[in-house]
Amino acid sequence: MSAQSLLKIENLVKHFRVRLGAFGERAATIYALDTVDLEIMEGETLSLVGESGCGKSTTGFTILNLYKATGEPMLFHKLCTKVELKDKVATLLTDVGLPTRFAQRYPHELSGGQRQRVVIARALACQPKFIVCDEAISALDVSIQAQIINLLLDLQDKYGLTYLFIAHDLAVVRHISTRVGVMYLGRLAELAPRDALFGNPLHPYTKALLSAVPETDPALERTRSRQILQGDVPSPLNPPSGCRFHTRCPIAMDVYSKVVPQWKEAKPGHLVACHAVNTGADA
Image 1 (cartoon, one colour):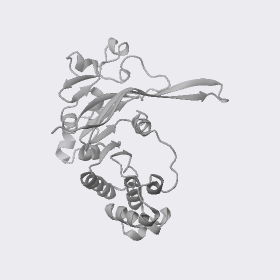
Image 2 (cartoon, rainbow, N blue to C red):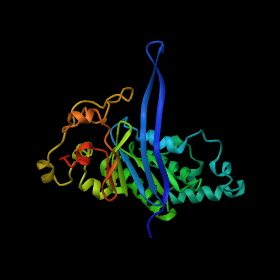
Image 3 (cartoon, one colour):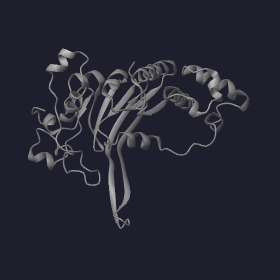
Image 4 (cartoon, rainbow, N blue to C red):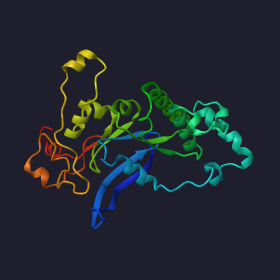
């Protein structure tokens, strides 16, 4: 039986109006997201990767339509009574690997890993089907990162959760993901099943990102070549025309600056927006 679609996003756009200048005399627009299409399937982990400022977190925040929380989430959403609350909290703490006595502790009494487990417990309190994990492990030590990742996988199996996992660490992304989307300057550059993307990336930006991931085998690490991108990410205040990656693309041609590449399925389940792939040239 094929997986069911949990969330489908079409032409997601998010622009921010800002004021520039010493006295805010000049209005400008930050093009944070521009026509992003995503479909997230039940039970999968879809990861978003890319450099800072590419739109990963904005995608998550826009999907969630965030607002300020009011009060205890389980009481606010009428998921339990005040009498049941203590037992519900104890169950959640146990699920995330913490003693029930931690319900009485303040944040400053917890380690970084313990705080992250509490955050996960709070997310589970509303009995969600879908959770956005935005840099969920970036501030943790490597050993604690592994514990949190394994916890997320265990909870996914137990509760049938679906994750949108936003991260910079491609090694972690490779471990946890079902599919991976690569973003650049507010647009998706590539989207594919994990093994297809890591084994055969099609977009030159994806290739450059993956070349930065170190090999665990020292012999392979010494022999492999890095693809270093030249220049900085352009400002979303004034994104490049055509393909937004063309200012840093090692194979860019004149047409790349004039025409937006189509978002196409190059292989089954493997989508990419790249002129070189769309035309059959060597990417």
